[in-house]
Length: 448
Ligand SMILES: [Zn+2]
Image (cartoon, rainbow, N blue to C red):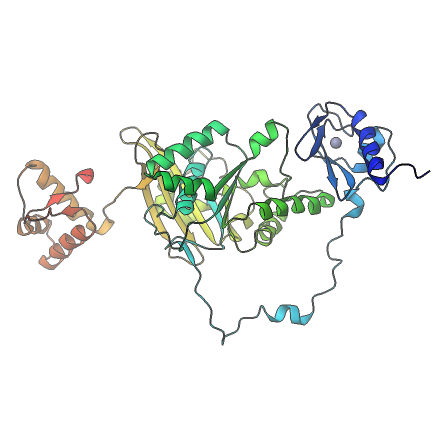
């Protein structure tokens, strides 16, 4: 009876299974085929081997038993049945008091301040929700940010704080390979990276192309949350091994809705946000997320984001937990302006930073996919700036010293003290520039 070794038994078992399902192909991890448990022609059955046993895994949620029954095979110890083998939640013993003790705030202990990644914007270890409509260049701007992190350069005007460049894993569910390549190359060029810096980026930044995985039918990334509890444990293990293999300081999930099978309004979304923090332990996680469908009657995105970024962010789709559980909310609106080309209105707010006022970003060159902040004259200086502009435009090539320009500001019926203060503020902000060795000032040409 025992003529067969255990190894050949599993091979036999596997052969039996493979001969009874349709459209089998071998993959890096095992096999893929049509699932016999439900109707449909897509390759929704994966066959994994785990610990010397076979796991038939239907992406459409058929149980192991149903799959085997439909091809006339008996359930046996050679097969893993996730329905039966997943430990039920809440079966753990309650925690000992001592387990909690180390997590109480200790007033006597010294603690390091939170470490910045980009000073004034992003801390290490934060859970970030990055909001914007589809096709509003979220993926591009987030890619620009992580290329900056992977090479140790400032992002927009935020200084890169860590001592060395960071490792990044982007999990991209939707982009085509060619699109990723176009953006990636353009941003490296747009940021003016040297060959050495580009090698840094190649080493530190990994982009997982889930769309390609799916199209080639090689492998899939299971959802991080699904209504089917019996599969959750398995799925989380798959993610854990992905994260263990590709350890990073920053992870991007683009977009969040592809990483789970829940309804976005489901109360389970809060659990998903918490489980993300557990899974990515201490790393920064950035979730790209869309907005609800726009309402023609409502205030435009651009107007609202400039007026009140918090209120604009309430247009996020789905459960409030997607915002409520985030440490930082990044907000982004793209607009196509006929005269000046595309622009992005971008700002952020969070638990541990002062609100970042919405900045206008412009593409540094057409098709560079690289965005830079446009200098804007602050509201309180607008009137003084206007009158200076008009004055200069009337006779563009005349030299003008400080006294003359202050007189111009005074014509706006402000006090002398205010006129000098505004003049100094405009110089400090770089709107009025004095070339070296000249007493005369010129206005920043981009702004005139
Ligand atoms: Zn199935």
